[in-house]
Length: 476
Image (cartoon, rainbow, N blue to C red; front, top):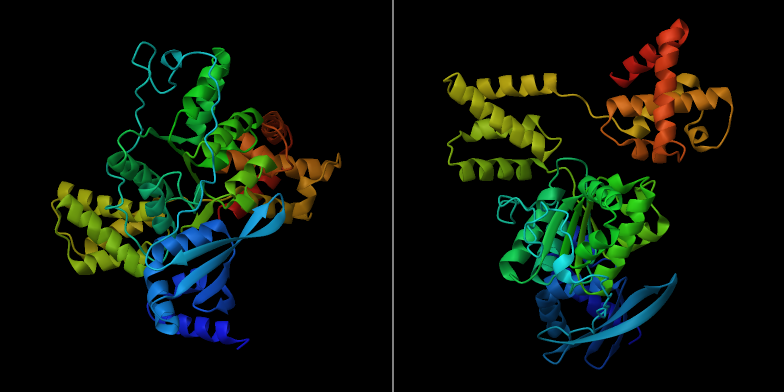
């Protein structure tokens, strides 16, 4: 009887495996550990609160059916949830009686922070002075809805979590919901789709989408105008806050500090935070540890490059929404040759339609191939700060870790300056971001490095040749 719980759970898994996608099975069922059976109650251990809530949101029906089959109609399921508190693990039980879900006690009790001025006098950084300040435009694009977001294996977890958040903002374990991916894979679309869905379902809730750079600029303006408290209080009144490209906070200590206080207040008040980034929290550089730890409180969902079938579905939906008739073989040609990201895929379709309309040409594979060749030829290969550091270090024959070490050795300092110079000229990263990733320096150091490299290029022919050789390697 000692292995009875393992036997029952394995029998359940055999049925579940045949009824859920393989990636979902690996993500949500393989980590579960059966612990014991007491009469008709099976106890399983799950690794976190959000794991428990996701199972309850998405898989309660199949869990109910399979467990009843094994233990009878009175079957019950008890979760032992691993809770992380200050670095120590604790176990918290939740018992579920089928059918239905238990409501766990609120994790975040509302916290009231007194305002230094009345709500009617708080300045809204999104409006011109004089306009009614209590109205907050959510800054959402009406086309970026769930209906226009094509689901595939590449984004299923992120989309499912987004739907759960939209149905119960601030009430799930997905808080914050941290969406990360390379550029052009739909994280901004998904973040805005959640906001639109919340506005449709909960008219009274205040939703706001803002990218990290705009947030930083607003904060700088608030400090300049001595309105820091108004800025803080405005953001503390938001019910669902969506911050896009949060990696742009890197190196901005004061912005991170104010966002830390906003994050804490919203989270403790049961409000919802949605963050997007081009990297997972563990890979973000130039960020305070206390902020990074909070990014990990909820769910971090990766969004991968779409597979061929998903790219086909994206194009077909775009064509359908625009009321255009395009042959299937043309759609397949576009989906086959453009696989890097969704933005480029949609750009190719727009180019195809423009060429057809302006030149009065039939939409066929010949025209599609011409468009693809033109896009590939004209598109610049994106390069990262890390790639630049590797190329520069290879050229100067030093180890990349040496760029992060505090030293006055001439060859290290010069290599670091060259890496900063190319990072500024070949990427869209801010000076603060570049400095944080290359030696943990500030923006002033990066600016000085770029000036130094430019001066040397004008006065030292040998150095100029070095820069040209490195540039060739970077553009290969």
